[in-house]
Each structure stands twice: as structure tokens, then as C-alpha cells.
Image 1 (spheres, rainbow, N blue to C red):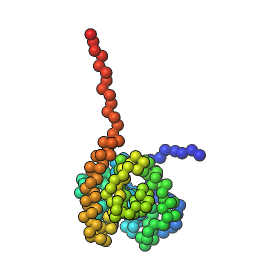
Image 2 (image 1 turned 60 degrees about the vertical axis):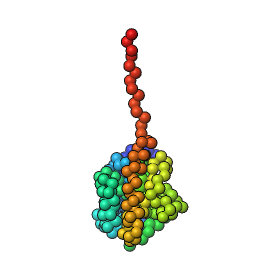
Image 3 (image 1 turned 90 degrees about the vertical axis):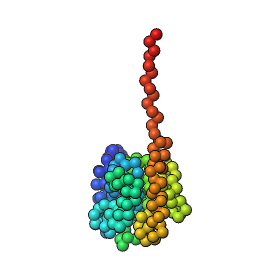
Image 4 (image 1 turned 30 degrees about the horizontal axis):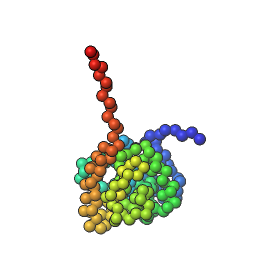
Length: 204
Ligand code: URA
């Protein structure tokens, strides 16, 4: 088998035509993801909802509006980051994605992360958290960064949780405020060593 190098747009086209699980039958559009293909931060949500399914774009409903506010609070916008989901097609009636659907979709997410190669991954909600922290509870580990396979992973509450439970709004806002310093730290730790100064010949 030969493997060809592809870019993120080509991968998105492949995801848009995916029929690897039952969600393909009920979707209007697959939602591969959107944003900067060279992003330093990737946000991973759960799965598309009603509006995302209609538009083929992630986080365009109420939770997305709050995500935009959270990004703006740390001077970022959607064009600075990449936003995608664990499953790329809407589970009917917004039910939780099933494990066979997550398993079928996981290779897409893995390829996306491989192409973007971010310094930091922010998981939004428990389904994306489980990819990195399988047995963890979000209430215990939210906001606590951990290096996993060389990338800083920060688990966060899902923005929709803050819409349903007002007290979480402050928590998620506070967790977001820590992201710039964490990113700076991740960049410093992974920084390429500086080029050595050219050796000057001393003329005697
Ligand atoms: N919730 C998610 O997890 N993802 C979206 O794209 C929209 C809402």
C-alpha cells in the first residue's frame, strides 16, 4: 500500500464524503473543522449540532457564540486557531456519540492533528477529554495542562455546559485566561535551539 501526503483541505473533502458509520445516513453535511491549518492551538469539541449540520461548520450555534467570546477574551479569533470535533457528523437529536461512531471517526481526527501539528490541544467536554484522559472526571482536571505525546493538552468544560449551568461560565472563563501563558510555556519548551553564531576567524 502506498500513502500519499495530503493537505488539510483534501482531508476535509475526504471527511465530507465519509460513510464509515451510521451517522452518514442522517447528516445534512459532515463538519470536518475550520480555521488556520498552521494553528498553534486546536480546539476539539464533541460533535456537530443542528446548526453545524446545516452549515457544515463547527460551533456556529449558541455554544459557538460563547466560544467566540472566550477566544476574544484572550485576543484570539477563529482564524488564529483550528476548531473541530471528535465526530464529524451530527448524532440524531444531538444524542451522545456512540463508541462505534467515535472509533470510526478517530482516524480523521488523528490525521487532522498530524497535519496541523499544534503546540496545544484544548479539549471541550468529556468526549474529547476521554481521548487523552480516558478515566478522568472533567470536574477534577479542567484547566490542568498535561504534556501528552509531546503536545500540551488542556481539558476544559464544553461551552454548552456553561449555557446550561450558569456557575460553569466563570470557571470556563478562568480556565481560558490561563491559555496564553500555557501556550508561551509550550512554545519555549519546544523552541528550536538558536543557530550557533558563525565562528569568526581571528587574523593575527
Ligand atoms: N458542540 C460541539 O461539540 N461541536 C460543535 O461543533 C457544536 C456544538
